[in-house]
Length: 180
Image 1: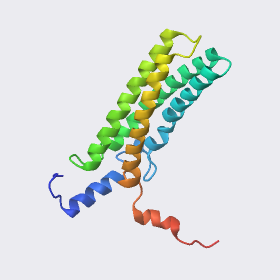
Image 2: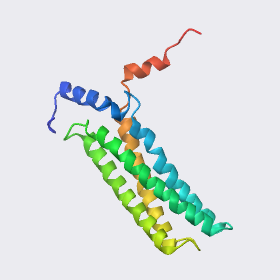
Image 3: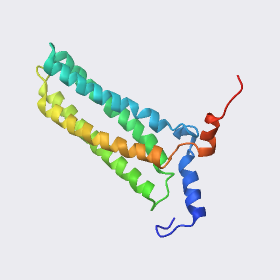
Image 4: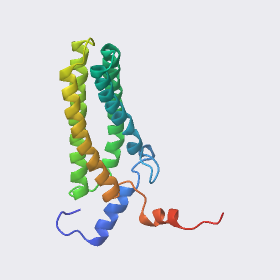
């Protein structure tokens, strides 16, 4: 699709392609697996931050430090899996469009987040668990802030532009009155 005044037909075709799964591996129509899988790294990484706080202000920094380390590891593994499914969804977006550029920005930020959590994981592995690893914590906080912005962009893709979201006609069916 050309970046200068695409025809309404071309725009409609690109929009329909972005809503359809490219392969059954991406998840069924209206239910992308990428959206479900991102909950694993997000939950693990936020939980690791909570563990860091518990280790800093609670009674057992060793236990919470070790827990934070492994939650970060789970998050990294989950993010890599979610990224594979995100790439499948990305491949259905038309080159040269605003939505493709937004998706590439979302992906790039997430790669930075994963790299930062890898750094945090390594800092924690080499620093021990006797106290809260300040370097690992700082890197994790920066990564979480970037993740929040990237998540906002992911929300723009799904909720504003409707990538991998069912057509409005399909959505409308949920708002009709049904007989008991």
